[in-house]
Image: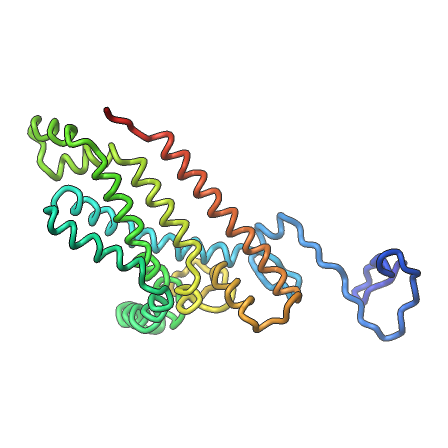
Amino acid sequence: MLLEAVDGTIVQMQRGAQETEPIAHRAGLTLSREINPSLLEFLTGTAWEPHNGRFGILPLLNSTLIVSGIAILVALPLGLATAIYLSEYATPKARSRLKPILEILAGVPTVVYGFFALTFMTPLLRAIFGSSVVEIYNMASAGIVVGILILPFVSTVSEDALSAVPRSLREAAYGLGATRLETAIQIVLPAAFSGIAAAVILATSRAIGETMVVAIAAGAGPNFTFNPFKAAETMTGHIARISGGDLSYDSLDYNSIFAVGLMLFLMTLVLNIISQRIVRRFREVYE
């Protein structure tokens, strides 16, 4: 059956379900056209409004990458510095005390981190940059706190990789006149590169998948912006909000979160594959 829509276009209607006999529509019914977005629209669209037929994943993807990038910028230097200190400078007694304390950070409930971001980090950023610049809900505070959250992943795994480097390499460097810092930077770090890279990628996957901190502090609504001080919803935050009961089950918005979840799964899968390849490519075996 061909019908003329209100905008003048001609649409084809398929009536009846499971090969039942077609029947005539009653007058005055509102007909909805099937929404079938293309993969190109899904990957390049800049608006995520399923109820309006707009399925661009970029706003959610962009905010997820910004929050994760800020988290890595926080966790990578602090985590590596901590790992080098524990591996190369700390005494066995200090190491046995400091490492468990650091690992406790990984056991703190993420909801605590979320309220820490909202009630401490956001006011701190607004005091530094101005309340007109930093919104109450923003990606920067969420990213910084997620960086603190993944700090134990970077530091402990990197410290294990550094400690696994044979003592003979260090002694050879000392014998050539290298200082302890030069040995750590120029000898030990390159030798442990595969383990450190794997730690960073695993921490990145953890940051991408973090839900509670971004749901509380980053914002509740897709927003395609590159300004970290603006509110924007990440993929995990969007899934948590939609599945939380505000929208009815089997509605268009509800079903669309499965596409977001699939995108999230593919991102973490690719990162884990890259991590395994880096470990195989740069692994060094010593006798």
